[in-house]
Length: 355
Image 1 (cartoon, rainbow, N blue to C red):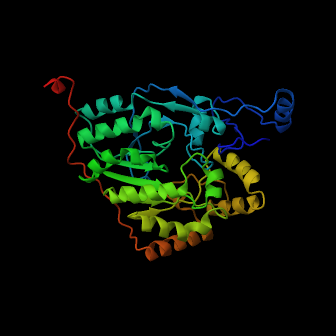
Image 2 (image 1 turned 30 degrees about the vertical axis):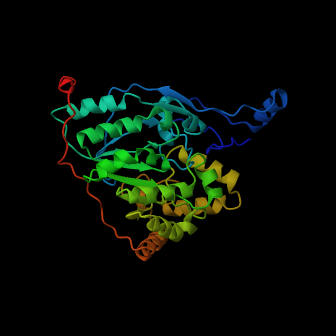
Image 3 (image 1 turned 180 degrees about the horizontal axis):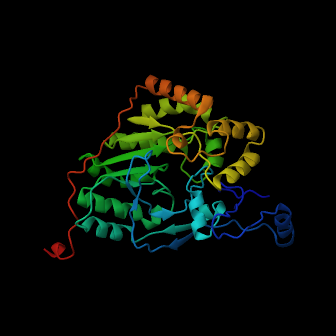
């Protein structure tokens, strides 16, 4: 089957958990179409406007460090093959495979909906996390600017926020982030999975070059914005050999802390990842999956709280030991940054803005 250049998934994939009809990626059929009609056109990114009634998502998971989040977009053009958010596309009767990367949803009313939430007397201030499901700085943010709209409101109301991204596009909002950072109201986590461009091109094909992300860490840190680097996910026999080099590099760039999570393969991500391995790393596909199964208690994925983020067994212990030693050599501690919540002021109503 032909591989679509610039896309992460090597197939569209199926989901039988909801209403998505079964599809077959038939290589012989594709070859026949190309023989009769010429090459199949490269699929283009489509964006559908979504008008949700609310914008804040509440979370009570014991191993996640935030209680509420905003996702400005559904789907993600970065195309990271390992993305644990892929299965969420099945809720729309779309595939977690190529549909997830090409059929996106944008929420242009996000800031307006958030303003309404923050105006409620019952609202309790807690940091709002962005980028917990899909990247707030994926390529379409350049035109839609939904993340910037949200940040402008957070600056206005002095509201704390955590931001997770793997894009240097975050530097376009460095003015707003620096404003929040002066009052201890923002922390950024920037993901750098590999320093090898060849690995990055197949692993996360439309995410910015690793060196651009390292430079983003440097510029954010220089502007006084606290940055944690994430080298997640660590993929055995693909990226795990880079742990020490990655930790050293992000520390040199100014990251205050560094974290890692072994690769997770929930629901439809597992068969997509296996197909990706067979395409790009056939020489070690069986080895990679054997180690992942060992990390995940004999399964492709471990959904249990706690162990899902850490892994288990000998391989998990080995990765953790290497990481702790690398972090110590880099002079990084394990301090957790706490954001202020005492500066919050509700947004002004339309009447107040007239005066």
